[in-house]
Each structure stands twice: as structure tokens, then as C-alpha cells.
Figure 1 (cartoon, rainbow, N blue to C red):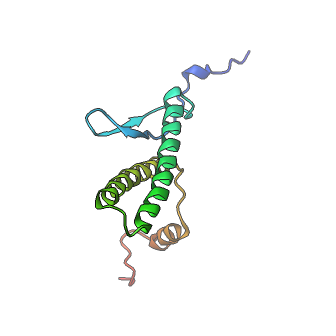
Figure 2: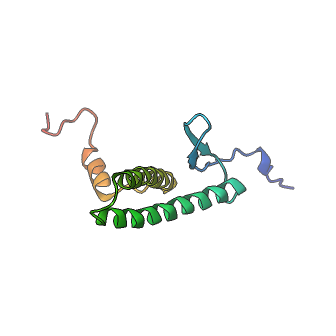
Length: 130
């Protein structure tokens, strides 16, 4: 009688998802990260909603800024306020882009694969054949 090896005794390779940059800083002002499987946790959904809100707010502020900057009679304080808010929204949008970019799978482009193929040769061989 053949007995199959126990599946639990076999080593299993586990590939963890990369940590997710959260759309808000930690209480100390440093970046906060979430390590979760699948991205369907309550905190992941909250982060998704926050990113959506940040991007929507940025679009609204941009629309308002265009109106303020288009009016040559806008007071200095209003122009300054719009500039401050635009800087905040840009920071939020860059953080969202960084977070989403970190979660994209790595796919080498054609130039990387060509460069690697050209660089392969016998050990100690130089490009000029010396």
C-alpha cells in the first residue's frame, strides 16, 4: 500500500503582497504601510475610499484654482490660499500614485531584456574581445 507524503510536511513557497503605502501619514508624520493579503481587508477598503476622496478633492480644488487664477482681480490672499491647497492636493495625488505604482507587478521593458541579453557572455570576456 502506497502512502502519499503529508502535504503539510512539504515546504510551501509563500509570496507575500508588497506593503501598501497608506494615503495618510502615521501620527509621527512618517509614511504608514499596510501588509494584507488580497487587498480586501477593512483597512484596505478605507484606504481605497480615502484615495478616491483625495483625488476628487484635488479635481475640485483645481477647478476652483483655475477660476481664481483666471480672474485678474482676485485678491492676493485668495490666490495664496488656492496655491496652498493645490500644493496639498498635489502631495496627496503623488502619494496615491506612489502607492498604486508600488502595487503594480514588475514587467521588464524591451530595452532591459535586450541589454541583459547583450551583456551575457563568457566569464571574463570583454566587449572588445580582449
